[in-house]
Length: 520
Image 1 (spheres, rainbow, N blue to C red):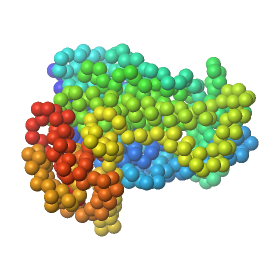
Image 2 (cartoon, rainbow, N blue to C red):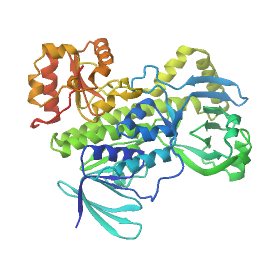
Image 3 (cartoon, rainbow, N blue to C red):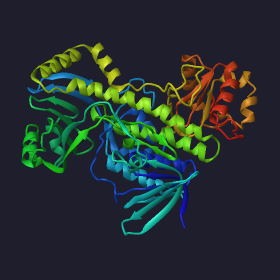
Image 4 (cartoon, one colour):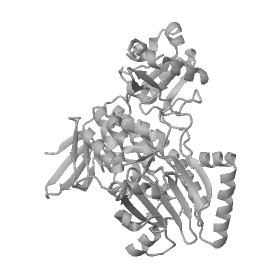
């Protein structure tokens, strides 16, 4: 007999694990299949930005995750002689997301926490050491065949299948979804190490560093804890160095006997985006949908954005609160955003890559100029990050605030920090000023069984910050999506129109539903 689930996730890396936790929290019957038996023990990603920390917070596991992050601090560029050409501190000044610093993080530890978090839900089944062998797409479900490490054949039926299975995605391959390239691939050689003695950390830079060596561009990453990483750019068709040669490159930084090597590998920096994110009852997320150079540290961050964007949409569709067309907005929103982020990563790469003598000289001139002029640094940072709002998708176009993030606010309660996102939860919320309470009768809200947050005990903790943000944006209220993107907002007179527009956009035949209201 086939096990029947709402959503089957293939791949339990960071993207699949976050998606699984959010779907489980939303009450969906979720099955996760992972081909490896245990978490990959070596970090692949090293960087998390402020928005991604906030997105991880939505899982409810931040208390367990935060011990595995450390401040990212500074990035710099030095020439082959050790002269610093450019230095920037990597942080977000306005703390929109409730976090003020990007971080190094321990990816294996994160994945273990996320997988452990799945165990709290009875509606989640996780199969490790299991590979998918077949798909058969029917009208309203997908039949999936699999085999585990013992050779047992397994059969499942899922309403939706999500490929979170990496750059070599079997889901993408099976659906014959092509990838569009935005730049030629570049080959690199990576060496991951651990310091044998923590005292030796003083011998290495406490930052992320680009080194413009005469023969090759080199990257050094401080990493989390004792992790230290080197990446060496290879020329076209260059073979991988021997272990002896690679360690001789590292000896320019530190004596190799002070390190324990945990991985050496040749790999490629790709710049690829799937032509489709959804095909039938299959969707792609994470590296299965896009791959980019690590120059802006946005590869995994983009995958987590996929997860928080997709999970609530799947939940609304599966629960029949929304039409299937809502899932089309996943690609409409995420694909242009990913392409923009990819272009930012390539902007950095193009400033750093150089293959000829003259291009290397021009590179040095550009970076020196940027390093000496703070306004140019600000422009570089803006072009590199490009974390633009959403411009199209599931949102109301009445106000320019639509498609932007609602800020995460913080409060102190008995010496403990409380975040507004934890009070909002992973669901729809209305955030309103006090004017709404006195001048609006909430007839539309009452018809939708909307509750009022100001009657809840945590309301007053965020009142001042909410009022200030609404006033700054000329708003009386906003409707905030589960992923903390603003659906729409406006003045009191616009309230009924925005709520009715949201109801019709979600599903023209939407039944009455409970939607939590977060009001000031």
